[in-house]
Structure formats: structure tokens, C-alpha cells
Amino acid sequence: MTTHPDRYGFYGKFGGAYIPEMLYANVEFLQQHYQQIIDSESFRKEFEYLLKDYAGRETPLYFAARLSEKYGASIYLKREDLCHTGAHKVNNTIGQILLASRLGKKRIIAETGAGQHGVATATVCALKGLECIVYMGETDMKRQALNVARMEMLGAKVMPATSGSKTLKDATNEAIRDWINHPEDTYYLIGSVVGPHPYPDMVAQFQSVISREIRQQLKEKTGSELPDYVIACVGGGSNAAGAFYHFLEDEDVKLVAVEAAGNGIESGESAATTQLGRIGILHGSKSLVMQTADGQVVEPYSISAGLDYPGIGPLHAHLFDTGRGIFLNATDKEALDAAFELARLEGIIPALESAHAVAALKKIKLKKEDKVVVNLSGRGDKDMATYLKYLPKQNG
Ligand SMILES: *Cc1c(COP(=O)(O)O)cnc(C)c1O
Image 1 (tube, rainbow, N blue to C red):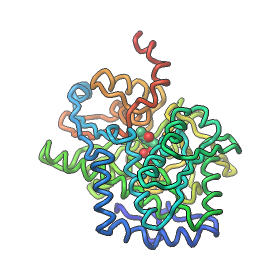
Image 2 (cartoon, rainbow, N blue to C red; image 1 turned 180 degrees about the vertical axis):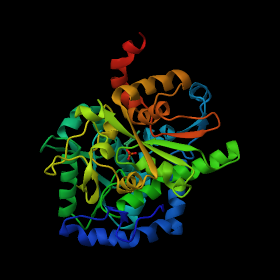
Image 3 (cartoon, rainbow, N blue to C red; image 1 turned 135 degrees about the vertical axis):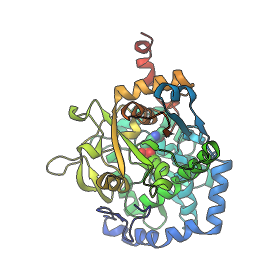
């Protein structure tokens, strides 16, 4: 298992670039130049600097003593929740905004579902003084009014997508339409390891700082760089890709990806793509996609807006296909229970997405000597309205 896709952007059967002809020139240019730019001295310096002084890296690898006692293994939490803006997403948006400026782009577009990627994009656009347009489903804008306000305060223009179900996939269509109409001056900033090649590889590289730090930190704490398990939740798959990246070739490290089962795999209200999806094309790449018999994309469901995505990045489809990744899933209920447990045991309120990764601890047969890293992708402040609904029940 290698970290890079082939030159056409394929990880095994998955990946590639399936895009309208109008975008060929743009995407091809990106494919030919991204690696050279990312590897350049000036890029690396500025990226490292902003990750440290702006995003607040490195993030701690915290030994969770009470959680460890409860589950009978050594459990470490990688604290991406402590990043600026509250999640791992800023690692990627910093990387891409530096790339966009080096390409001379003046106008940044993005789409967002829950608004988290929109906020992370608006943040770095403000940082670099670039115009920012974020497409968001009209339904999502109502549901996530706070994030709309954050984006606007940061200077972004939030454009409602009013077609279809008025959610993420409609916002994606709008963003791609915009890109086709402005291929010259506009950079499309994608928020996960999805999209046409080279986005999945590029985003994975920007997020790989997570596993680079885990290796060093684990070495300092335990004498070995290698844990037995790395566990991360998967929406599109960027925090998981970052947490797995530098362990992909270490076959002894079990890589556990946790999808959102929503109300249960069989319930018709789920977002567990590897369990329910088939090979198809979504968002410009070939991967596993939740779809009807005639290929219509199915509206996914999860209590956590960040995992509510009908596909999965091609790297993860490949990890699933080859068996290198262990794919589990957690229901809404299991994620809520895990969030309340983590809050009470460790004083950390996780994002609902991250709570799915924590919930997987119950599904793995752990041994006392096991070292387990759970990637805590984000903090739970944004989810307090949801947690509040369940709080009285938890108190009994
Ligand atoms: C967006 C988000 C996710 C899901 O995105 P991935 O690309 O799968 O990482 C997970 N956790 C948090 C906190 C998020 O904001």
C-alpha cells in the first residue's frame, strides 16, 4: 500500500478526474504543477509557519487515562479539536490557499454542507485578502445559521443553492458551474479527499501532518512510533487520511475508519458509504457512491452534518477494497453516548463527527498492551444545540 495514486490519480480502481471539458486545461495544469509547488522550499516554509503560529500546531497527543482505564488499553487522543476554527479542516485550507496564491488566483470558491469547510475557507481567504464565495444549500443555510454568520463576518459571500434538495450536492453543482464559468481567475477549494485528481492526493498530503506528529509524539511517550490502532471518522475522509497517511505502509498498524450509520445501516437513513454504496462517479472521481439502481445519488443521513456525505474519497474506497483499512460504523445513538462519555471521563466535548471515532472503541476487542490513537477531529461547541436535546435523558 503506497500513499500516492498513479499518474492519472488512481488508487487501484478508484480516483481519476471525470470533469467537464471546459475544466480540462485548468485541472491538467494543477495535476502537472501541484507537487512541484508543494515541495518547493518557499511553500513548505510558509505552510509550516502558518500551521504553527496561525493554526496552533502541533496539536497534543493526549494520553486519556480515565478512558484508557475504562476500555482496558492505552488510549491517546490526537487533539485536532484544538486547531484554530475548531477542527482539522484548517490544515487543508491553509495548504490550498497557499497553492492558489502561487497560481495567481484572485477568487476562491468552495461549497459547504454544515458550514465547517466554508468557515475554514473564509478564514484563510481573510488571512490572504482573497475574494471568497461559498455555495451552500438553502436548507443547510437555515439549519446552520451560526456558520453562515461566521463566514459573513470573515468577509465571505454565502450563495444559496436553491435547486434539488437544497443541500450539499446542490451546492457542489453550483460551485462546479461557477468554476466552469470562471476557469481563469478562480480556484476551487475542496474540503476533503474527494474531487478530481489531484485534489484527493493534495488534501491527503496537507492533512498528513496529523500522522507525522502522531509518530513523533508516540515515540516520545512510549519509545515506539507505531500504535496498534489508529481510529478516525470518515465523511469524505480527510481527517482519516491525515491520521492514516504515515502508517499506510506499516502493515502492523490497524487503520480503523468509522462511518456514520445514522439510524442504522438497514434503516434507509444512513451515510455508511462502504456498506451501502456501489462504484460510481461523484464530484469528479470514481469511488463508492450511495446511489439508486439507476445511478441517482441517494440523500445520506447522519446526526452529524460533517459525515452526511453520499461518497467517500478514492483512497478510502481502495483501503476498503484491499482490506488495508478496517471499516466500522456507529449509529447516531452510539455517537451521542460516546460524546457524553468522553465529556464526563475526560472533560472534552467532541464534535459529533469525532464522537463516531470514539464510539468505535466499544466495537474493537482491545488487549491491555494495545496502544490506540483516536483522532479527535473537532470540538463540540458547534453541536451543543443537538447535545442539549439529549442532555436531560443522559441525566436520567
Ligand atoms: C468536516 C468534518 C469531518 C468530516 O470530514 P472528513 O473529510 O471525513 O475528515 C470530521 N470531523 C469534523 C470535526 C469535521 O468538521
